[in-house]
Amino acid sequence: MVAPAPGARRRYRTSRADWLRNLQAGGPAEVTVGRATFRAEHRTLDTDEAVTEFAEYERRNGMIGPILRSVLSWLLGWPYDGSPDARRRTTEQLPLVALRPRGR
Image (cartoon, rainbow, N blue to C red; front, side, top):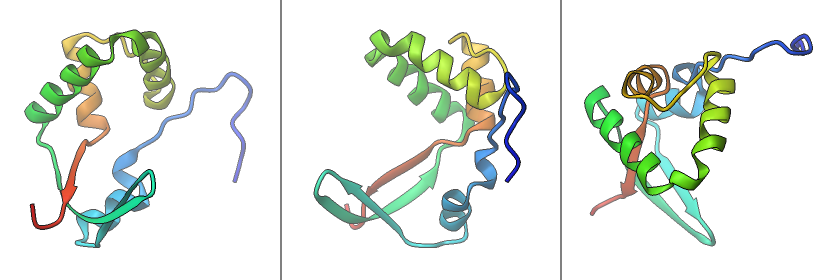
């Protein structure tokens, strides 16, 4: 692994993340929340649904907005400003996955 130069921006392409590729290949999903673990069904949200869910998340968690914008800017490699256009671009670059307990 090569460390980035000081001050360099990192770009993460989650479409290449092993966990996402495993889910897309039909691998089983197991979720742990606290001490509870369960098998889960999953689906990747389409862009419009992802934008809506992401906007709702930002609305519900407004107090962490500055932290969220900073972290996303770092992960994405471009300045995320919370605008509708930035939200759409983000959800196209970082797929959102919905998980729910299997059989529900």
